[in-house]
Image 1 (cartoon, rainbow, N blue to C red):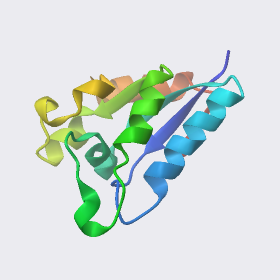
Image 2: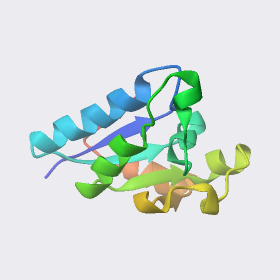
Image 3: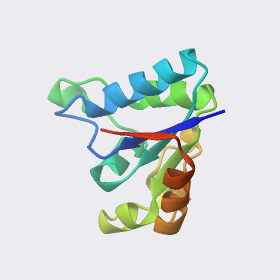
Image 4: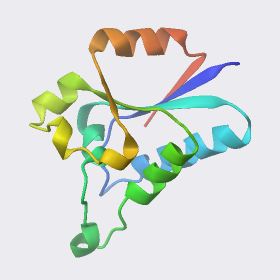
Length: 119
């Protein structure tokens, strides 16, 4: 079966890309299309545990990401993006079971996918 990559490049708040990416992933599941959620650049901020954006008038993206995980969508984070932003593995939400990958791993996933949707 074909696999699609949903590539999250933006932070979780102030822009709708992250929530729309989750909706894309869920929509693909409805169509029986397997997909992977890969977080790079500022997208890695979506994965930080204990987010509480109430003070800025937003809902947390964590519930939506947890739904993707429950539907067995693999969630990946690029090691270089985490490192550049000072984010350690212990800072990531453990409920998401994030797999940290290298640039080489990312390249392989992208090459094996039939399509990539970047948000």
